Length: 337
Image (cartoon, rainbow, N blue to C red; front, side, top):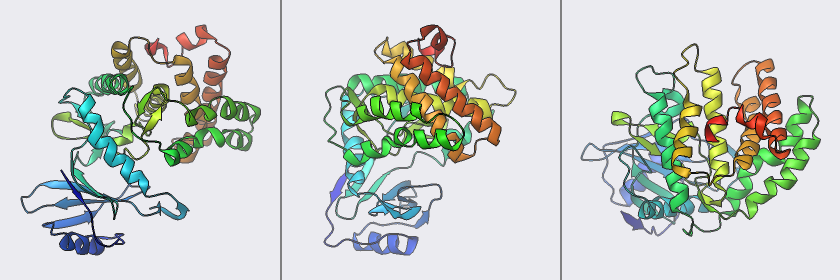
């Protein structure tokens, strides 16, 4: 792995500009291609002279899909630090791991790393050839091990990441109001739980832990990507976010094949290795917040189906804050308890 320092910052928004950058830094390549699907950054796939495929990720001081939204480029510094630091504290896992860094240019915010594959777990979920249950269990075990082994790891104070991660909390009241629900619950949860994101210091969290950030490669090896939101925090938020998104896949993409079962498999895998350390109440609050705020923005189903997602999120949060453990033990989180 090489840390580069370029003499001058370069704008890299397309393949022509990337080719100019690569030539200026004596990086040999056969081809480069801008990838679709990235939100915050410009992401390219490069084939090097040896025929190896690698990923190049570049940050501008704004969100790539919305240039009017500022986003500090030090997010790439946090991702680079995470990719270098996390493997030092975890045993080798042949099934789930972050990508290996090849080069990092801190001046131009360019990160070159392993290519984990072209399909995300979200996209591959409906493929009958993959064992969703086994994959869910492996992700759960990996995440529990990641949290357990990073309790004392200093990843830095990612204030922009913390602020962005609070999005589901500070928008919850408006979302509830827009869909005909009482916004008071959203105001209360942001005050009592959203505020905790600024001071949580339990372990290192991935910060954007969902099936879209697990790439499926050869022999179903999983690569965990997009670490720019990594932060010191509460493990329950990673668990709650993945649980919410897994539940949406099971509900809207699982069809009649009940063996998909990503959510229960993930929770069982996490529980088996975590051994009761995760705060189930915080998991339920975060999962509920996610179900209230994200499905309506991502068009998972019909308007009525999205309203039912909001209702489920409300019920989950209400059960958590009222310590209704009987409800939670019968809920989607039962396999974590």
